[in-house]
Length: 262
Image: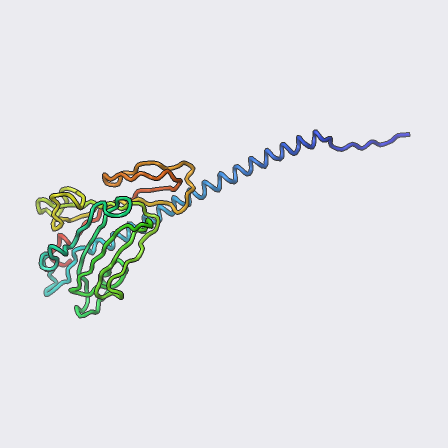
């Protein structure tokens, strides 16, 4: 009599199969985690680049208003010293007085409109509020203790007349150098800090900016203790895993060298 014998997997075979499955699962999990970290890192870099583009456009728009004077008869600009005084110049600032040794930049300009409190919104302050003709507005750009780049707008045509708002989060440092024209050829001959002993702000025709941007999340695979050079000022990262990027550019103050409206 023939008896069919049925046999299953042995315990050893089952253990080997489970071990192989676990190894494969670990490999898949490692690939998933690696891809996720890579995505997050690339996403942070993309956000940093987008923030850099925004800040470049924003600061160019705000700072290029510096020294603008409301046109008078025949569209002639009055001279700078007829509008801006020694104590309220068209540009000024402080060096290393903000958080992380950051600088403060102050710019002033007049607006455009009726001259009786009704701006035509051609010229706006850093909070996007119109500045009327013959009104002098002051924009103060600085870093606060929360790593936020802010702008304070003092504008008699605004409501309120003195207001401060955040421009961008996750900014670790803000540095400014002033391009001074030493021979009256309307181009900068040197770039110096605000506390340079022989700097004459009345001769400034350009500013050079350096801003250290930081990611929102700490997902850099390597701890960052790098010393970042921002226009000669060193900022050392705190050994965290934020991703950082320096944004640096120069802005010419076209109104500071123009006497006739274009």
